[in-house]
Amino acid sequence: MFKKVLIANRGEIALRVIRACKELGINTVAVYSEADRSSLHVRFADEDVCIGPSKAQNSYLDPKRIISAAEVTNADAVHPGYGFLAENADFAEICESCNLKFIGPPSEIIRMAGDKALAKKKMKEASVPTIPGSDGIVKELSEAYQISEEIGYPVIIKATFGGGGKGMRLAHNKEELKKGFEMAQLEAKAAFGKPEVYIEKLLTSPRHIEVQILGDSFGNLIYLGERDCSIQRRYQKLVEESPSPGIDSDLRKKIGESAVRGGKWIGYESAGTVEFLLDSEKSFYFMEINARIQVEHPVTEEVVDIDLIKEQIKIAFKERLGYTQDSIKIKGHAIECRINAEDPDRDFLPDPGEIKSFHLPGGHGIRVDTHAYAKYRIPPFYDSLIAKLIALGRTREEAILKIRRALDEFIIEGVKTTIPFHKKIFSNQKFISGKYDTSFVENLFKEKIERKDHGDKKGSEIYQRA
Image (cartoon, rainbow, N blue to C red; front, side, top):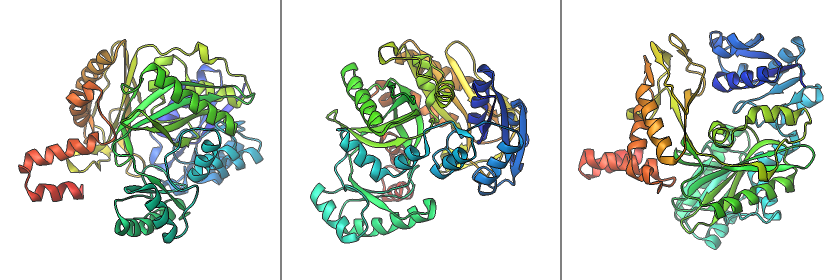
């Protein structure tokens, strides 16, 4: 097994990786920016190295600084966590050239998955259902017009190398397509350094379903059920659950087998996620591959009782997968919500600052992944995630009751958080019934504004701005 792993990340995921490494008998190295000197991942790692100033571009996003930290501490592997350099094929390649094992897929797989147009092409080759749209990059507006007419409006323009909702625009007609096409290209260039976009048919109010896969370097690949990530705002996930309340056992098998078929076709290795959209007719379509561990991986861990981070590390060390598809059994129901330092009443405006008081919920079936504590100062430079709250119940109804109870016990004072917003979600009848889709949060805000403004035009204008 590896002797020492450097964690090229921060916050709760860095702490999560440190715990997995220690349970495997591996020493750990934490890297941190000047803003993260007091973070728990620094305290609990065996060694730590400051890699630069607060801005991520000069610390967590700088491959040279991270490689230097690995060399001076004699680390033999690097775990990227999620975000930052986790899906940076160049960084993975640099690690490989420096005899540092990158704990994740090989660089060529990351590069292929990051090119969403190419990934879609590969899934088509593997007979995985894909959303109608362009076969690859759309370079000219005239081509965009032609494709959109063929598949029919509305369409969605997506950045080929994008993620997190950046470089995405909707178009319901030719005029909107012209404006959206140019804006998506500009945003893609600014966010990802590449302006390439592609076009897909817009599925109205689908469910967002993602399948967790694990593959080793010997050609073994399995799926570990699915997660429903439909509760999201501006393409950012807020709540995840497994299994999905919108999927039965037959459909689960079909989606899972499609994910495995696609993964095997491209030779996928490590933990990853194959994402799908599910329409109202129960037809599913490939959306993208996330070649990394996901923020929401704990909900899968809870229902299949497998530590996905440990599996990532073992696979990277060239161990064979210790599970077969038949050995994977889903037991119970898990729900995760992301507790962010944001003010839901002010359009989810981030609210960094010092946490004055911090009390974690507990009890049977409750898990909290966090790097925060009382007197910890949330820096303004990074993602606003404070904690992930996960509830496991024997049934979905029990999991909902548990997470509602846990939210009541969760005390964070000093900064605004999304706890009150999550309480509303888990008390909402549409969520409780399981009959929701990706328009859930949008409709929730729309209903709130309509109640406040009694349906007048001013309320509608506020909603459009939001």
